[in-house]
Each structure stands twice: as structure tokens, then as C-alpha cells.
Image 1 (tube, one colour):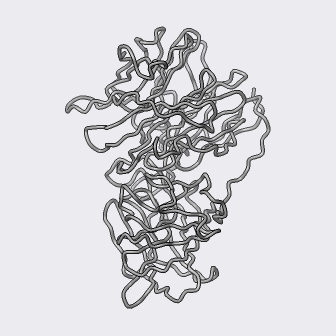
Image 2 (cartoon, one colour):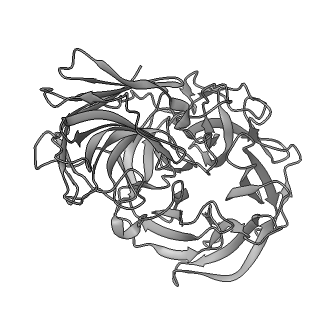
Length: 529
């Protein structure tokens, strides 16, 4: 029996993959992956599992998160948040090599008394594989469980799940490594739980695409052997291509104060295209209610293994009134609001200021949109494939190497950029640059002379699979810039490279001559339609 109130999935729309959940008292916290974006690991807070508010980032200092040079879709993978002995514990990976036989990955641990921090200095744990999590056993011992990666030809890269004890006093892993489980299917994302004399191993299976799912195994002994659930996948949509939530998998469990159980997991909402479905918003965070059977296995409460869009909230959940997220940022605060992210490096006064021109975001141009090191770019996640993005720019470039504008972003290999630059003999011009799976073009017929415009407003309209750019000199009359673009290319499912993030929209500035030309953005608005 439930309260009759429901949550609606995804509870964290847009790019919020690999969710990790923990309850402390009456509050729930979810941490998610950020890959190459800074700051790392956003955390959201809720008291009812339905309404979530941004509560900061757990990796927000340059000294704890150096992402310069990491490839697209590398960086921070699959954080795992837990609470034990009055402290929060965060395990996370930094992956520095993708798309080759190797995975150069370092796994770290930080702790804090409060979710707001301060967080401890990172403790290096190991580099044997990604997706680590920490299990706190009833006897007070701590155990790190992670995937073991095998780079050797002719062998499964996903070489099974391994376990090793963490010694808090020594701040290091100690003892023998135990191999818990190998499986013919690709398995990763391990999390351990203990209940009624059993150790349960929750696993992500089948990769992060259309074959994704969640699988359970159990053992009477921590170190195994572990037996797989004979019913197969706890959660998957691999056999339901028309489901509203696809790619469902990679989850964690949480128990309510009244003993109800919920599963947090990722899923994606596709846009149909002639080439097949593409998930522009990336992998999003969802929640399902689960129940334990009489024979000790876990099942989705609604009876099958497919995720639902609407799910009952806990019986004792308080009635909360959601606070809507602000559509518009007028840049009146001295620091960036929590919804903004930067690429690989933190926002610092050397290239970003909210005080030099009060009421404006000032960017100093740095490296190109193809750079893996020093871009002056700030962006927000898209949370709907039908939305409008608008900003106002004050920028007077003196050279063709100086650019600034509005960018719709997937990664350095795929993005659309409505930018202002300087053309010899013509002055300030507005045009479009396209980077399409690594191929760069600048359509000559998508250029406007804007030297005499009194104001410069830039707009991007997303409508399902279509993206349109426009500009205005007064905020009333809008002029289309360039053709209708394929918005679905800003997705995990386009191109030949490994892709794990989601679409963003933001503003940026470049000065390829190194003189740090200044661009001021008066405001930014992202409105779901």
C-alpha cells in the first residue's frame, strides 16, 4: 500500500548518468558522473525521492580533479557515495585513456562529515579497473569492489569483479585480491549489500547502450562463490525497443526509514531518426520501487523487469513543494550558479569573471573548441529536446582569430557554434561553424554582417531532431542563420567514437592569437517548451 503519490522519471533529467544513492536520516542523496566536465560529481538532495534539489558538487577543487588533456568521454566515471560511521565516503575513478586496448584509470577515496564538505584530500586506491564502490560490512571492515580490466588480445576486456580490503588506518588497500564473479556477459558497476545472511552483488550488464541492464548475484560468503539470479535481469529494456525509457541499467539500492526499497538507475529517452533512435539528453537518472521475494531475490515491485515512468513514492514521504529551476541567469551573483559546468578546468579569474563588468559574464578567449586543455566555455545540460536557448553578447573582435558566441555541444568532435568574429574589410560578422564527428566546416551562406547592430542576441531552438539558429539586433526581429541542423548528432548514439555524456548549450570565447580578447554575455536563458 502506498500514499497514492508518484514520482515521475527521469527524476534527474538530462546528463546525469551512473547514479549512486544513499540515505542519511530523512534525506536522500544522489551523486552522478561528470566525465570531462568540471566541477565533478554533482549531488542532489530529496526527502521524498520525487523532488530533487541541487546540493553542490563533491569534486570542486582543481587540486582534487585535474582533467586537462583527458579525452572526450573520459574523466570522472561512476562515483559511488556511501555513509558510514557518521561520515560520507565517495569513491570515484578518473579515466585518462579510452578507445584503445588500455584503460589508464586511477581510483580514489575522499570523505567528509557533511555533504557540503569540506572533503578530505584524495586517497589513491588502485588502477586495476573502473566502477569502484565501497562496501562497509557489519564488522566495521571496508571493502573495495571494482571491475578488473584486461587489455590483452583475445581475452575479455571486462575480466570480472574483484574485491580487496581497505584499511582506514593505513589509508590503503591491504590483503589478497578476491575474484568474486566472471560472466560471459559484460558486467561492470558492482555494488555489494548484506541482508538476511546473504551478500548481494548488484551489477551493470550488457554495456551502456541498448543492451544495458542490471543483474543480481548472491553468496553466503563475502568472497563468494556468487550465484547469479536464475530469473535473469532485474531491470532491462533490451527486449522492449518501444519503451519510453531505454538503455536502463547501472543501479544502486536504498532502503527507506520504513523498510521499503528503491532502485536508482540510469536510462535514456530517445529521439526517432531515419538512422535509428538517438538519445540527445544522454543518460538520465530514474528510480523504481523494488521488493524482496520470499526466497531472497530482488524484483521490481510492478511485476516485470522494465522501468516505469511513474512510480509510487515511499508511504511516509513528506509532502514537498518543488522549487522550479531558474530558466534565466542574469549573472548578478559573484560566482557561477550551480547548474553551470566548464570543460576540464575550473572557472577562475584568469578567464572568467562575474565582477569585472557587474551583471555580465565576462570570458577571455583562449583555446579552440577542439582543445582538450584550456577552453573558455561554460554550459548547462539540456533537460528537454524541445527548448529555446537565448543569450545577449557584447563582443568587438579585431581579428579573425577572435571568436565568441552560443554553442550547442556534445564534445570536441561534435558541436554547432553560432559565433561572432572579424572579417577583413567587413568588420564584425556572425556565422556558423560545424564540427561533425571530427569534420570541421563553416558554411559560407550562413554569414551575416553585424558590424552596425546595436545589440547582438543569439538563439538556438531545439525541436526534437531539429536545431535552428537565429540572431536579432533588437530582441524583436529574428533572422535565421544557417540551415536546419540535425540535433540528434549531439548524442551518445552518433559517430564511431565511444560517447558517454549528453547535450549541453552554453557560451564560449576563443582567442587563437593568445591576446585574451574579452567577450561579455549580459544574460543567458534556457527554457523548456
